[in-house]
Image (cartoon, rainbow, N blue to C red; front, side):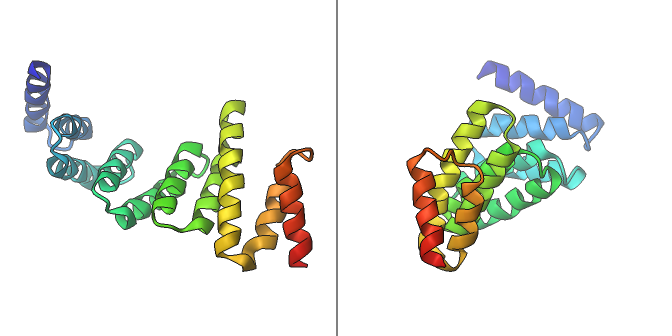
Length: 177
């Protein structure tokens, strides 16, 4: 707790000298989060975003607060902005998928997990995101049968042919024709 007070004082001193110092606003937000004061943390993050509206770090922190506050539609809009700013980031697409799942939107959830899979940099991440895409694809097809053929054809390009999931997606295509 003592370290936070010192850090907080330093951040305020920095802001007294330069109120556009976004790292100080973000630091104050982190301290507010540590103190479980999400309303104050959000205020600090929004101050930072007034200065640098495309700051990915700040936007991601704001999403966490919005999700903790169950303000999912706001979180989703910000996640979409991050995806526009960083279209090759598997993390941001995975974050969008998690929000879409909470919003009960299986099609966007599948599309987002799939984009996370396509942008993943490590084999471990690719396997994880592919599995998430496979499961989300099933849910999307269940909720949106008109998209079944497109989803299944997309997934078949990436699922190993010797897997049970490959056989299931193959059946989906044959039953939709």
